[in-house]
Image (tube, rainbow, N blue to C red):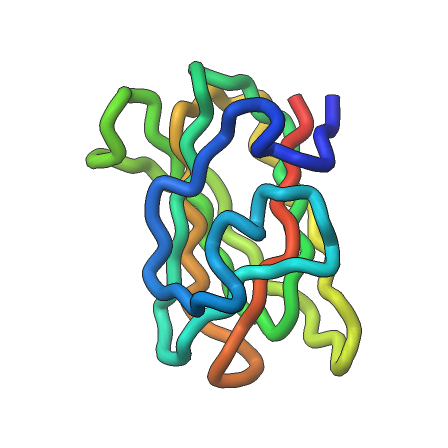
Length: 134
């Protein structure tokens, strides 16, 4: 199942490394491709999403601009403290176009996913949507 709005499933943004009042982190999960979260420069940048209950995840999709390298980590406890790496991906540069990437998580179960943007193609990156397929 793919949901265009993770927020409708009770998913919350638990943490974001930076925030711009015009482009808040909650835009990542609202399902609207016209809204986005924007970093405030420097790397790494990260955000953590929290599921309402443990969730099996086959694929994560991410629509973004200027992201070069991304790491995804998972956590299976109620608190977001101990994470283990589940995926790493280098994104192709798409000058002026939205980057759309699918990342296989092979049916892993998680209560939190941490997305760490380790580098970008510019000083600022934006994340427009994160989706999950179970």
